Every structure is written in C-alpha cells, then in structure tokens.
Length: 345
Image (tube, rainbow, N blue to C red; front, side):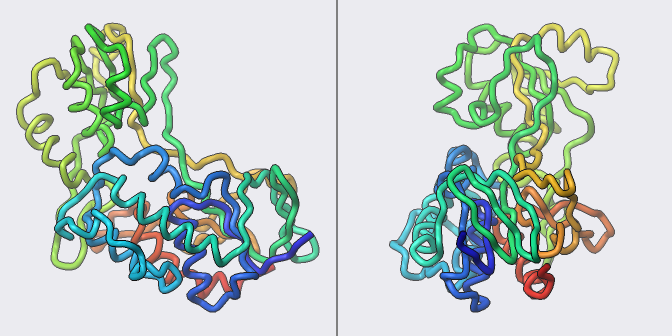
C-alpha cells in the first residue's frame, strides 16, 4: 500500500490550488497523491460553463498566475486574456485554463482517477479507501466541492438548476404555457429568471425570503462580497426586480399570505437556494466531522478547503460571510497552509 505525505481529494478549483501550493512549498511531487473521478476542472467546468461569473476577469487571472507550479505563463493564450480585466465573463472561459493547469499538475504528482469512499486514522497515518485501491497518507486535504440544495415540493416538476442556468439545455425543456416557480434571490436566481422569460412560459413566480443585496466596490475591499449580487446579474436585478417587473414575472414572499395560492398555481420549479457540501468519504471512527471555519482543520492531518469548507470571516463593518471564489481559496490557503504543515497526526 503506497504512502504519501499529502493526498488531495478533489480536482476542482480548490483542489487545483491545494496541489499547486503544496508544490510551491517544496513538497516533492512523488509525495503528493491526487484523487478525483474526472480531473476535468470540477463542477465549474463540467456544469457551469455557460453561467456568467460574479467575479471579474482580473481576479481569475490572479488565481491562474498565483502559483509557480501552475506554469500558466507557459499556457497557450486563451480568450480569457483578451477580455477587459474589470469585466465579468462566462465561466467557460475560466474552465479551459483550469483544465490546462490540471493536466500540467497531473504530469507531476501521483494521480488516482477514482472516488475516495472512506478515511480512517491508524498509527498516525490516514488510510484512504477508494473505488479502486487503498493508500495511506500522513495528511489529507478534502476539496470535494458542493452540490445545489433542493427544497421539497414533490408535486412540482423540477428543472435542475444546472439546466435552468444553461440556455442551450433549457431550450430542450417543454415550457409552453408553464407556470414556473423559482425559489431564491441569489446570483443564480437572477440568471435563471431572464433565461426562463425568454421562453413561452405563462408566468414565472419568484419566491423570496428577504430583500436583494448588492455588492459595493470600495477602495480596497468589497461590501457584501460573497452575498451580494454582482455583474450582469446585479444589473438585471436592479432594472427588473428592484425596478419594474418584466411582463410575466411575479414575486411572492414565502412567509406572505399568498404563498400557498401562488405555489399551487405552478407546475414546474427551479431551486436556486444555494449549495451544500458534496458527500464526504465515510469516517467510521467518528461519524460526521466538522471543520474549524477559520483554519480549515477537521482532525489531525485532515483539512478542508473550497466551497465545501469555506473560510468564515468578517468585513470591516463586522458583517460575517463565507468566502467563496478561486482567488479567495488561494488567499485562504496561503494564510493557513503554514499551520497545516505543522498540524499532522
């Protein structure tokens, strides 16, 4: 059974950042194992390519150029580099460079294209079981990503959010005369709503809990950076939600008296209500494990990173939020990796 110093589970943006930074910190490539079923840029590449980002291009480029191990300066020039760094873009333009970086890193570390199924700590080493084989590692980074949350309204025919966010996939849905419920008021919501209204739906009813929140760009930080609307989604929301509703759009407060009546009028539904951690490898010694939201520590030698284990931080006004984004993952890793390197079993 091979033993490694570090094993990274997950090959989305957070897993890519972890492998890159471990190499940058001098961990030998043959001491790093990397586990993922696809190695295709994570869900960003496989599910969300058509989605308009809420992050500017310059920030994505800072991530791609932020690790020497990525070697992005040697990559062929991409369409992402042709866009104004202050503009947002479709995530597909970010996905292709991520796939390029992934292939470069795969050439250096030990790769297992499979799914990790369980973790257990024995004799100060982690035994990792996968669908293919077992290995041991002194340290493990979980960067498993997240999946969309769902609500439970089984009488409604669900349109998966990954379909509703993709105009080409949505075009394959039968929406003539449909009344579609959209739960949520997130960035995704403000992309799904206009997508649906381009189709011959009868009505779209947006069910919401609270007022919209917009990011505000200040001198050296962003108010509501992780919870506020940005980019094209913010522009659309200002004009069509906090401005004048477009034809065929209604909104309904979920705690209001009309909620049940409005919901009963719907026959399709889209849930844009956030994400939840993807299923983790089993840890039968302890059951469900939690993580420290300031340093990512889960257990001795076991750490969490990325959207599944985001950093929780307060802004200068004391507003707390979970920090999610490629560059944020890298910045967070820079602050906590020196601690991780010392916190083994």
